[in-house]
View 1 (cartoon, rainbow, N blue to C red):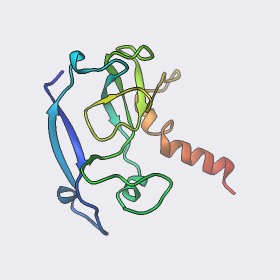
View 2: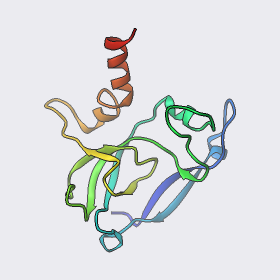
View 3: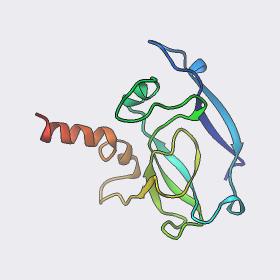
View 4: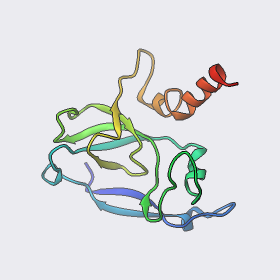
Length: 147
């Protein structure tokens, strides 16, 4: 495990086309150790990050189906990863998980915002940011339930 966790903070609300260097700030923080975890917490290493069209809307300070990303908050995004440290009885080291843990290499969580995943035969973890992810599910239900 490397010693630093790279995180992307949302630093400025964009208007129209924007410069990512102004909109986001990259920071490095120490990766939590097992001793840093409180009871019930776990650490997830992100393998994949889903980049979705909805993210652009999350950057606006407007009413929507989900609250906007706040300034200086880790940019929201769904990740697929693996539990690397755990003090949570519901998750063990090696569990594969997905959830909105944001744009960061390692995410500390209490487990409430993630779920375990097991790719079916012929699928991979990467499929959880595609066909089994938010955009895939939106397309599926849009085709079948769209009116």
